[in-house]
Amino acid sequence: MAARLAARHITQEELIGLEGLLSTHSKHIDEVEGSSYFHQHGDFDFHYRIIKASRNSKLISLLCDELYHLLRMYRYQSPRAQSRPKEALDEHKYILQAIRNRDEELAEMLMRRHISGSRLLIEQQIQSQDMD
Image: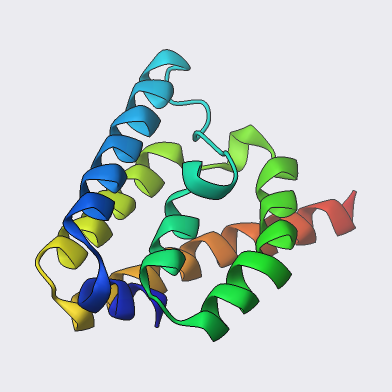
């Protein structure tokens, strides 16, 4: 929902900021030879910026305040061997392209697919930890 609304409401300045952010993330992935994604908080986080660009106060409150820190904790604790930095960056680029094109439906579909992939990875990590 946030990606759909971001496609509708995002400003040119925010688009430029997201492009720069993904460029920074790409450089980081190259520097660490693909071993990790550039996980930062707030304005340095791709998802955070998309949520803010949605202009929906309920989504912003829920996703940037309540769930955001929990999800960051999972990301931080996830083993690097099981992360997928290059794939995540590519997915972010596709999402940004859909938002730039104001394609609300595609932006939402791509974000849902991206989040589902991340959720499955977290579930696998939790199951793996339970078996140890």
